[in-house]
Image (tube, rainbow, N blue to C red; front, top):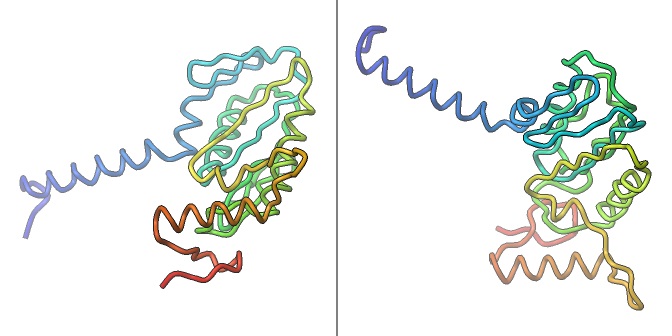
Length: 200
């Protein structure tokens, strides 16, 4: 039996503390909040500084599995500053099962669960919701600020086919992505929401 003063106990406690600190450091909400500062005029994110003196809007868009957490960290840092902000609006696409946005900005920014979990193929819903993201970006004025939150999984959450003489249909994109996935990984879809046969 190890005691609180034994070398083994100390090593175990240190190992647990190191692991916990490592996990906390890479949490998407913590990482973004730690890199964000707002003083009422200047918005600093990492090494980038933006002058929002004349901004009417702060638009937040994005896509990816970690973007709900990233959004939470960004908004937490802005709120904690207690400084007046421009109007906040936006849209992010996340997989089903992602955390919903709570707090004072839940009616300003939409967290859209745009595709089933474990399904990495673009869907019509993703294409439609990507257009909502683009509409927010297009609405930005000369002095407004647009923040894009991007993380892993965005390839199936941010999709806007190029229109040409023969536009690429959503189904064609989905089929191509599925075929590439089969050829490369030998796996089939497990989401249960796209009609594909499940892998065993």
